[in-house]
Image 1 (tube, helix red, strand yellow):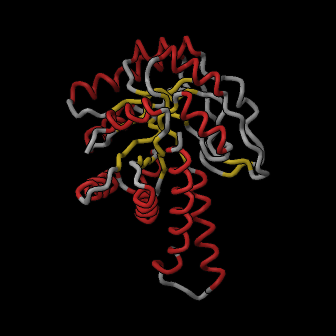
Image 2 (cartoon, helix red, strand yellow; image 1 turned 180 degrees about the horizontal axis):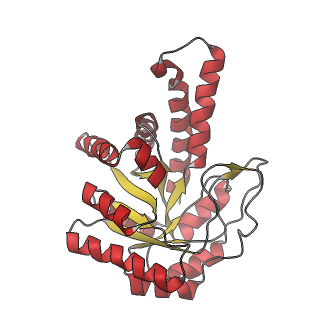
Length: 284
């Protein structure tokens, strides 16, 4: 199976994006893999610090290894990780990539801590890819009444991005380009700054990762892939589909107590949403 680095490079050259989907349990995991199989595309599984705590770092890593053994082209990313020690944990567990999120730090400290993660990976010899982040992408993956007030106040500057990449040694960069974590309940769509993506890609020279894809328009997401975002993250829409499916199942039979029955509709919902995005991201 190609490495994640090779797979990202292929997406970069084709000007398309790989889908990155966060999961919290094995049901969502299986749904994402089923969607990827339906389309015949590689896929990334993401787990944040909270999702890893619930799922288990070693548990999700074992599931990915088993899927690969069965011939599935799936990769595992440690999403938004806020400490060097937590990054070391997932590197040692065999994750394919990790994002050290130092976006809350000043630029110099963000560079220093991100470089410490890069140095650990290089010394380990494991080949884990390291992603860094500058700029602010907003809140967590949940439903919101309104977008954060400062959503467009701290977008990534292309020259700062170039400095960050050069001094930290990261493999991928997550810039702030107008997206947000979460989705607006009223349906408003954040506007992605495609010109900024192109400028950052040209200045930084590494594949970009678009966080907060849920809630953005299909047209913007496709354009972001063509402009240089080789990976697009989807989380909130996965959570919404899972919950809606479970709620629908329980509403149809309030006395049902077999988890594999009332969870099933949630799994179907996740598979449908995931497949839709994988197809969108793979279009040229």
